[in-house]
Image (cartoon, rainbow, N blue to C red):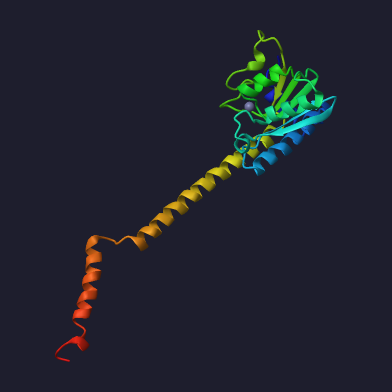
Amino acid sequence: MTEPTLPLEASLESPDLPMDPALARDRRYMQAALDEARLAEAAGEVPVGAVVVWNDTIIARGHNLPIRSVDPSAHAEMQALRAAARVIGNYRMPECELYVTLEPCVMCSGAILHARIRHVVFGATDPKTGAAGSVLNLFGEAQLNHQTTIAGGVMADECSRMLKDFFGGRRRAQKAAQKAEQEAAQDAGASDAPACAHCAHCDTGATTASTDTDPSQSPDA
Ligand SMILES: [Zn+2]
C-alpha cells in the first residue's frame, strides 16, 4: 500500500524542477481522464473522468453518468473498468492502471480491488466521500486479499478547479432560477389579484357611479 503522495507530487510539479519522467507519464494519462471529465460536464453530470491503461496504452475510458443512465453505480471508474474488462476479456486486470480525476469513493475503490487493478492515480482529493485516504482508506487494508497501490495529487489543481467551476456554475444557475421564479410570482400577483377586496369594490363602485352620473342620462340634460 502506498499512501497518497500529495506533498511529493506537488513538489515534483514545481516549475523550478525538471519534470520527472514518471510524473510526465502520469500527467499525460490524467489529461486523458480530464478530457473524459469534460464529456461528463457537457452531459450535465458532475465532471469526473477515468481511463484504464494497459501496456502503456489507454484501453478504456469512462466518465460520470449516473443521472443520464439512471444508475447510481455509473461513476467514471466503474464505466472505465467495465469497458476495460470487455477489451481484455477478463474481469480481473492485474496488469492495468487506472487514472481518475477525483479520489475514488467506497464503491469504486471496492470495484478497483475486485478487478485486481495494479495501481491507481487520482487527481483531486474528496474530503466527503474519498475512500483512498480522505474519509477512510480501503487501499490501506492489509487484510484484504488484493493490494492496489495508489497515488494522489496528479494535476490536482486542474481536477479540483473543474469541479469547483461546475458546482459554482450550478449554484449561480439555481440562484438565478429562484430569483426569476420570485419575480414572476410578484408580477403575477400585481396583475391578476386585486390589491384588496376594498379596492376591487371601489373599482366597481367607480364604474357604477360614473354611469349613474353620466350627464347625458340625466333627466335634467
Ligand atoms: Zn465512485
